[in-house]
Length: 117
Ligand code: SF4
Image 1: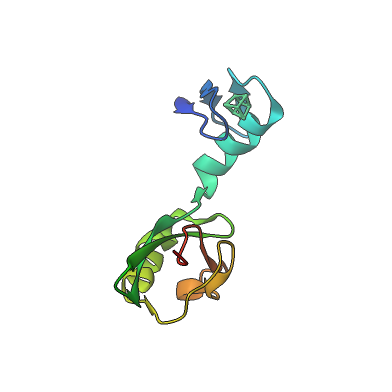
Image 2: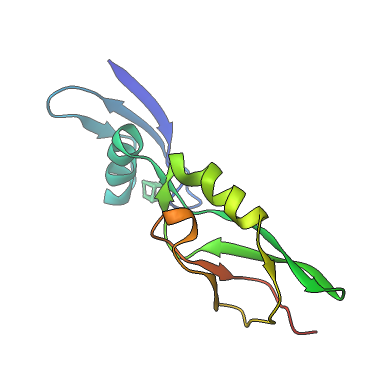
């Protein structure tokens, strides 16, 4: 049985065909990252989380955030819920950690937007 996937690692968006079995094969990738992506996608898919969190500041009521590493796809909803419950009461710099180990995912939530205007 084969599965078709689009690699999302880079803008090339290679169309991959994975033939499943004892030794799965991947075709259509322009680089080795596509093989890793396809095999991970079928066994343990991961993504980085991006979103916004509320702040206590009227001039910047929300700020964009992301996880500092990929997290298992099944952690997306718990992480999104934890991020939605946050309200930052301190102005942080881009790249600073807003919350460590968000929802027990092992990833830190970091600031990606300006809070200092
Ligand atoms: S296989 Fe390589 S070149 Fe193709 S989309 Fe994935 S990372 Fe980019």
